[in-house]
Image (cartoon, rainbow over the protein chains, first blue to last red):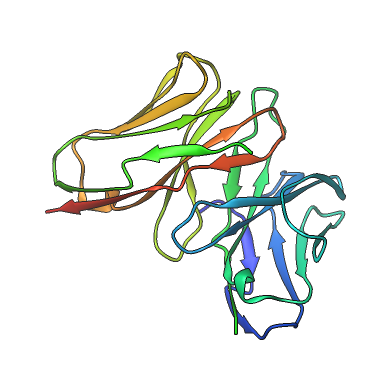
Amino acid sequence: ETGVTQSPTHLIKTRGQQVTLRCSSQSGHNTVSWYQQALGQGPQFIFQYYREEENGRGNFPPRFSGLQFPNYSSELNVNALELDDSALYLCASSLENPRGNELFFGEGSRLTVL
Amino acid sequence: GQQLNQSPQSMFIQEGEDVSMNCTSSSIFNTWLWYKQDPGEGPVLLITLYKAGELTSNGRLTAQFGITRKDSFLNISASIPSDVGIYFCAGQLEYGNKLVFGAGTILRVKS
């Protein structure tokens, strides 16, 4: 177990709706990243938060937004949901390491858009 | 953008056999990571490689960071049924930066 918890584990939305996914990082980790994993593919980087600020973003439209709170927990918000947004959304937390950044993932939130 | 080519796409092997899978990239990475993902769960970190040429083991798993910094391989010795899952390689360009993942290798083990 990585100590990274995500909620909800599963949810179903309809096109055009909005969704908020939540993540609690592992104790002591101050960086949170979000990834989208479509069925049969590897995870794709959405964005990263460090000390409550966005610190890197992947190729996702602005309707994907996030927040990080003072306790390092994080939210991913997706507006105007589209069918292609159906995926497993993974949160990963990491600890500052001069040698590199090991990311530890939660179990994910499975989003289905109908 | 950066892409990782992971092979093979899937493997179906006999319990006790050794397994080898690899990952290649058109770009140089500073860090390579290998993850395993079981159905319905998030990826679990297996091994992290920080330096070109580095060879690192974790139990029956051994991974190497290629000299060119554009490839990595993962070996599993004496496979067991619980090795079943999807194995992902991931490359990281610089400290704190995003991970770029391969498409995964599906491993099935016949007991």
